[in-house]
Image (cartoon, rainbow, N blue to C red; front, side, top):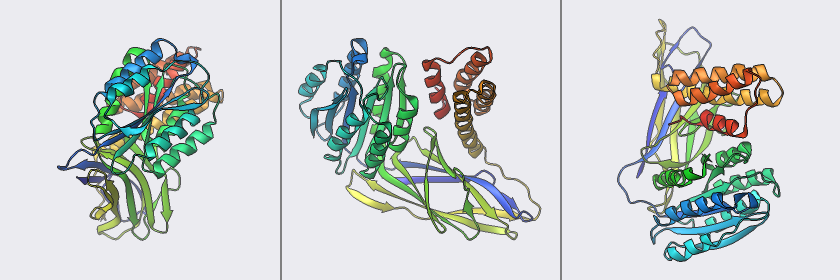
Length: 410
């Protein structure tokens, strides 16, 4: 298993008469090649608070059963249930006695409040104990606010998880969970935010997430960037992931070096990273403006700190400048614009600027149309129209908007 890295610039040419040229660098990263599937180490952290009573908890149990039935004896599993406090239902163990594990899940009963961070802490502890040479993923499901917990603590715990090379995915069930909190936990945890709008969708969404987890070939990936003299990253929000979902990332910079944590690399579903660069004035020539390298772990082989070859990022400086635009990078720029426009719309709505929110939602809808993302455009435009007509956005509207902003809707 190796890293497949592809790069492209928004415009591979720059004019020689400009003191600075701004370019977006798109980097696509995936796992490729032959190799055995690494065993899995899964932890379900399941909300059993009172609001999960009856159909919600029943369907979550069914969805968890489907995943457990697909595990092998090479895999490990743990189960945490939480209300206002957490309980370890299944300690981290080999996925051998699946019927006993499913019986323990079936014994869940709903009641009490919600403490997400207690559940998350217990889950990270169990997951970390079985992470050696495995793809370790936590699935946190809740249908409510963190009323008995601390959201800041939950976010710090997601950061702790990535420090242990664990991935945290979140699943919001119904309409009353906090999309800001679950998005921040998933983003910090290197995982995905999922919305189970209707109970009957739980099995399909759990299944889709499990398929994604199964496709992970390499873990703990870092993108290492060495900038040539004069080339620099933008000061504000210089790097973001734009696929499979949009996430603002952090670059740790020291001198002309920058490092970005990417996390898991999947097969056939690349992570696409967009970096905003400023290139200095150059004489007419082909010049290297940056070098890229990736470090990662290969859990199937028990290898850590694997290093790829170095990739040179080059531009052509021209006296008679003729742009060389890359269409795929333009699509990535639009995906990031859609996300940021939607975020601005939400912020303006919170501050009471209804017309400002309408304008930005319409802009995001137009951006989605440019991308060919018609379903997202429909969601965003319908919300803009509703606000313009004096209506209010329901909790469901807000959650559909958040998902539409982060992903390309199917």
